Image (cartoon, rainbow, N blue to C red; front, side):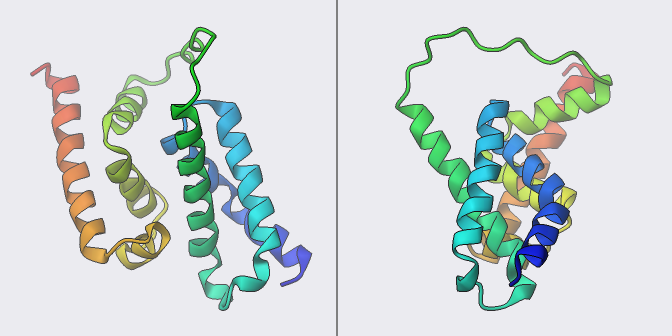
Length: 158
C-alpha cells in the first residue's frame, strides 16, 4: 500500500474514527491521541493487512484497542484537576440522544454506533470488535431497548 493510498483511506475514515473515540473517551485530548496513535500503529503494521477490502475493519479494530488501553491507563490515574465544563447546550433532542447514548454500557454504545450510525453490517462489527455475530445482535437489541427506555423517560418524564 502506498503512502498516498493509506492517507486517502485514513482521511475518508476520519469522521468515523472521531465518532468512535467520542463514544469511548470523554476527554477531547484523549480522543486526539487515540486517533493519532491508531494512524501510527496502522502505518507501521500496514504490511500485515492481507486484503485491502478489510482496511476499515482492521483500522477500527486498532483504534478500539487503543481506546481500551487509554481507559485502562485512566483507571490507574487519580485526577488532580476539576472536570472540564460541559459544552454549551445544543438542540434538546440531539442533547437527549447524546446523553442517552453516553448512559449505555460501552459494549452496547459501540455496537450501536458502528452498526446504525456508521452503517457497518453485523458481520463487520463482529470482526472489528473480535466477538461473534450473535453477541453483536444481542448488544444491539439490548442497546436499542435501553435507548427506548431512556429516551421515553426524557420525553415523557416517566
